[in-house]
Length: 308
Ligand code: 13P
Ligand code: SF4
Image (cartoon, rainbow, N blue to C red; front, side, top):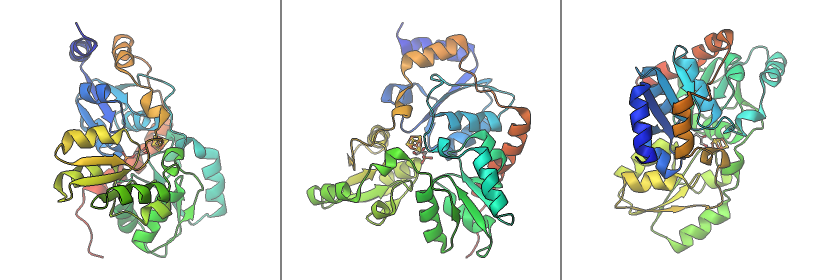
C-alpha cells in the first residue's frame, strides 16, 4: 500500500478531513479534501461534519479551525510550523497599544495567535480586508490594524482611509523586490502581474491585480492573458498550473519560499492520523472571545457589498 492509500484508509476510519493551504507541497495538496486560502479554509473548518480536522498549513490557521470548531479534534502534522508574521505581535503588546488608543477598534489579520484574536473586534484575511474595513468601520473611526503593515497599507489605500498600524510583515513576501518583477516583465512582456497583498507597496504598485492565493486561482482561470508573473510564495505555482493548465506561470522570486509551509510531508500526515497528534489545544475563554471576531468576519464576507 502507498502512503497515500494508507492516509485515505485511515482518514475514513478516523472520520477525518484533510485541509491544506495553497502553499503546501504538491503531494500534500493531492491528498487533501480541500485546498484553499485562509478564508476558504476557515469556512471549510466551520462547515465540516468530520470529527477530526488534519490541518496542513501553519499554526494560526489550525488555531482558527479549532476556534471555529471547538468540539472537533484539530491536529497538525508538524507542530513547529508557525508563521513568523503572526509571532510579531503578542496579546500583551496589543493590549498596550489599545491602552494608548482607548477609542480605537481593532482589526486583526487572521495571521495572528488565538490570544491576539481574543483582544480583537474583527478579523480579516487577504481576500476580504478591503470589504471588511469598508463595511465594518466608519471612515473617521480610529482603527488599529495588526500585524501586517503591508496589508494595512494596501487596505488603507483601497479604502481611502488610515489605520494605526503595527510594524509586522511577512519575511517571505518582503523578499519579493520590485526589481525582480521588472526583470520578469522584461523577459515576458505580455504577462499579467498578480501579487499578494502581503507584498511591499513598491511591488503592489507594479501589479495588475492584488489577490489572495485563492483569488489568484480564480483570476488565472478567467483572465485572457496566457502568461502570468506571480508575486507570492512559489508553492502557489503548482496549484495555479493544476487549475489553469493552458496558462504559463512565472514566480516573481523563486527564493521567496515559506519554510514553515514546507514542513508538512505525506509521512507526517500519515503519522498525525495514526497518533491523532499534534492536537491544537486552546483555553475555552480564549476560544469564546476569539470566535466572535472570526464569526463576524465570516458574516460580513457573505453579505452582498454595500453601495459606497
Ligand atoms: P492567503 O489567505 O491569501 O492564502 O494568505 C495566507 C498567507 O499566509 C499568505 O502568506
Ligand atoms: Fe506567514 Fe508569510 Fe509564511 Fe504566510 S508566507 S505563513 S504570512 S510567513
